[in-house]
Length: 570
Image 1 (spheres, one colour):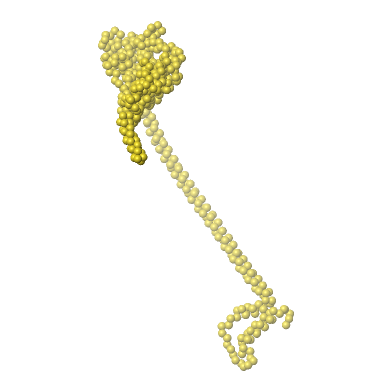
Image 2 (cartoon, one colour):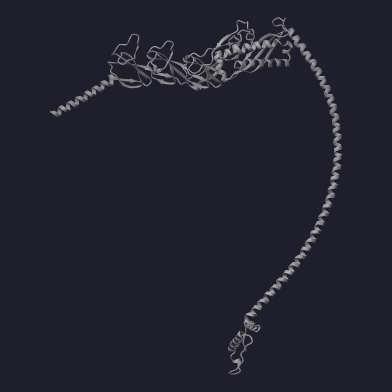
């Protein structure tokens, strides 16, 4: 019975566990898809204070700051409610779609419309997310930018770079802004919108904005206060510029102004009847002069921050410096020239050089580099001529042209006379050259003959000297041959004599060795005695001829004994 009870309890427990797991899976399970996040809302607990929308303390009822990312969670449905929200995505952009082009200025009526200073940057650029915290502690008076860790309401200093984030939309609000993209050929000048105040500025006087020349009494003269460049942490324009690249900068905290680097064109010319920007001024003789000028100017990177700090943008540089100064300098310098000076090429060149030099001097003071000012168009109008009447001007041009033609005709005649004189001198010099050439050829022939005779003479002397030297050498060779023969004969005689002396000394030594000449003779006889045949004669017993071999041995022994005996013994 106990065993059955245990089995019943175990079975009931397993069934209960299965039921509990089923309830938990279907009633308590919270699934968050991969492209969404979940906001937790507490249905029980302490009520929120008046005006507070999001719970900031544990146990408070309402929307919680906690955000659930994609995944599977288990929460009590009696206590919690889950609300799905899409994830916050910051686009990364596509560099392949980026396009850097200039915008057309068609339709604009101001004088600067001929400069094409406006650019269009099209394409899918990367974005940044500017985060605004809507709940938390109130910001201090004047505080706009706050840090994420502070928990204070306001714009967060940190921005969201391209990516995907799980943010509570009840706590944070995200604004998408294009990232700062600085193309090649540009730099970015950074201006801090918040921070400590910089030092006091200085007063700077700029050229007037109208067409009148600047003067101390002119009330339209523009006066501005230029603040010094700010240091990091201070409000204002920073000295360091951004090089080409992509930067994730908070546009609520910093402003970046693009400045084109290098030389650009600024033209005051006539584009059409309705778009005529040429500069007009009276000449020294009262004629009305209209010139079209193109200025090649540029900004160096190290001066970009100073220019933006002083003028705000590049277009204001054209409005406040280059345009007014160009018109003022043209009028000041042009009014000192005669009308005919603008028709003659030499005087026009001097006017252009003076204009360029003066504009470069002014630009240097303003940190603007001016390469050259080109005078492209010049019109001369008579002071009394009506609009469109060019008769007086044409007469002036015709008179100047005829004067130049007469001068050039006289110059041509002078050049022709000079050319004729030069041709006569050339012909005379040519004759002199021919005479000199013939003289040189005759002298050359004489020199060749002299050199040939001298050469033959020297060759004969060399041959005779060579024969003499050969005969001398042969005589010396004959003497040497005779001396050689004499020396060889004497040497051979000495060799024979020495050989004979040596042989005699050898015999003398042999004779001395044997004791006497007789003993040596016997030795010689015995040594050379080599009988080829022996004849025996039988004469009976006891005769000498019966035993020749024994007699020979006996005789030889006897001779040797006698030879050994000392001299004077028998």
